[in-house]
Image 1 (cartoon, helix red, strand yellow):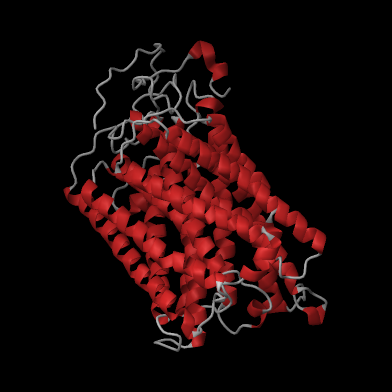
Image 2 (spheres, helix red, strand yellow):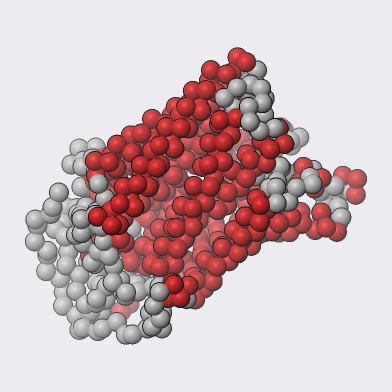
Length: 561
């Protein structure tokens, strides 16, 4: 689909070239990547890393599902099973989902969508990547030395008494937390200080709003996890007694600390995905986003309320009745800004000129899957229901519908949407559509049966189970194989596109945000000239604007209005 409209004329401003800057390295080859300060290259290195760890976590998941084919032991014993599901959760959460959209796609496109040549602190950006790799090395070391068997939440007293590699694993997560904090600081500063002339807060793409809200969560919540894991390490090495009842400690205190970070961390995972879906639905519906400010500010509302609901993970941990009622109410309340987003996305699609390209297919699948995840979360927020469903497969299914059906499908939608922009190559659209349908079928076949099992009392994290659940487990396992085939197909055609793909035009989808106003792939400085923003990022009723070099000297005060 091509756009034949003529660009509108814009105001002329004095021409001012981008100066040659320090972050373009003179070296070539591997060294140029290792020392680069270019946000696009750093984002690509993040992208390669998170995809690698997604592959590792996926293999662990397939091993779990294969072991659960029969009620009795299949090919791994109970201790090995505990270690495998712990590693699956830790790798997927800390090494893939948390950095997948903000650190990878966010790094590549945040400055471009702002009309900037880089993030505010390029050296800090590179440092955050190496800190992430450093933490990942500790995780791989832990895997090579037997892994851990505590579950990815590292609950005490399991983590204080386990003989597995708890210290190295938690220290790796502790290190990666600094990467998350530095990325959040960098993104917040970049949004505040490096927007293009004319790009007011009301003209920011919603993906930028989502990264801004995510940055706030990263900066405020991650230190709590870091302190908690540091206390756990000190508990194991020095016996300080923070979580040990024999020394006057409280193991439930660990849960409070952990979930005070980890529930906001759920929104570190999903809020950037919301931003991607906003971009996809507006672009492929050819409509202005419905309720721009409601969608933008709901990201900030989710970030704020997300700090207040950690206790709904602990309804069975012995809280007071008043606490459980308050946390239950706040859990219902956090659904409001999420519901605002879903309703506004549907309203945007209403009577739109919908183009069912691959990114839009992922957006529609996201709406279906995440809505199931959200509604089942509301059910788990109800006290009487949660007592029955707590620690059952119902929670596993809910979590995966939010994290995988939400974050991963949004990540895939964004990856396909921006793939032509940062690679300069088009992928096979037919294979991409087939893969998206395979993934959708495989996902639902994997996790829908788990809702049924959980409602019937099948506990999660169990190595063995009653024979009455075998058929549902086998459906789930076959679904995981279908999922694996879908991901292999995605990897195949994307890799092939790098070698044989057609050259991508600068704007294959007819987008209106700034990244589509530069060449594919993007040049070193992102733009040949300083862009001047005169339309919003979703003004599809306007012809595609031509951004020319120049800074509005008489109107500097409007640049960051």
